[in-house]
Amino acid sequence: NFSSPKNGGISVGKGTRRLGAELEIHYDNPLGKQGQRDSSGVRIHLTPDLRKDEVGILWSGTIVNVGLLPPKTDAIYSSSICQLSINETAAPGGVQVFGYMPHIHLTGRRIWTDRLVVKSQGGPSSGSFVTDLSDLEKVDELSRDDAYDFNLQRFSRMAPTPLRDGDFLATTCIFNTMDRVEITSGGLGSYDEMCIGFYYYYPAQAFEDMLFCSGPRYFGTSLPRNITSFTEIAEADDAGTAVPKWRQAYLSGELQCDSTGLNSVDIMYKSLSPEFRNEIEKTCGKASKTALNFGGDVQAALWKCSKDCARLLYNHLGCALLEDAVQDDGTAFSLYASPLEGLVEEKCHE
Image (cartoon, rainbow, N blue to C red):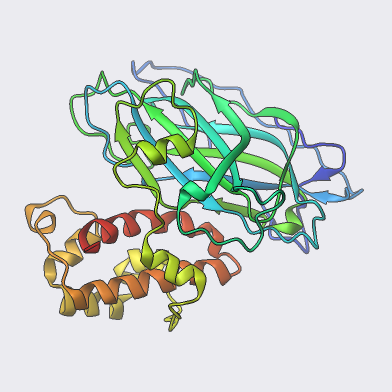
């Protein structure tokens, strides 16, 4: 059961963005049994006496960009990190997290979220811009589940825990694919993988009602059991701890974005950005279009990124990430920027 604190609730009805609700129930019947009936349901409690604080949901982690998980491997890690932007005028002292629900799929074994700040700052990291993740230090853990079970997904209450403007969140998942014979990719299906922590907080006035927090990813195998923090993972990973220079340039404002109005979802789907896709094909070649569609064919795998192509892709990607941040509903899209970012970083890094 989900229950909000006495000072908070989720507003519904006229004057809100929630004018209706849809109940979606998933049934798993691997044995194909016949004649099964279900009498379960949901009871929602409403009150006309509005409470002080609006409850929001923060997603930390990644939906589809967990990486390609190799089969027959007992400890694969996937970590992502991002920085929060909290309006502390609307929420003096930050927001309070009061509940969480971890979400991985069938190969998930462990999941936790670290809260980090800039070293030696002695307070909120608001406005701080770091060029290297080694400048961060772990303050505490927002949540941890070292015995995750896909068949036992549940909401858990926690003592109110503050998040401040400028705090960094890093969510890590550990996967075990010993029973798989093929590569497992990120995706929406139960046999694909995800890595998400859902966090319930108030007041939502300080964020969008629903905020997504996803950033650069670290990925690898054979994570030692004694490594329990994101900073240790970043230091052990071959990718290093330096923030990519292109991302630094956009975030610092050094590289100005000539906005095309495209967000990262637009860029992913040709139907939403036909002119951009045609420009990619003209500048980067046909194989790049296949690669951007996450195709696995040989042509896409062998695609090489030219200097003009890199300039085009990085500029559009950087603009799209910034566009996500300024749009009213853009926070819902920033999670999907990661797969595209990973591809461009891999193919065009040099």
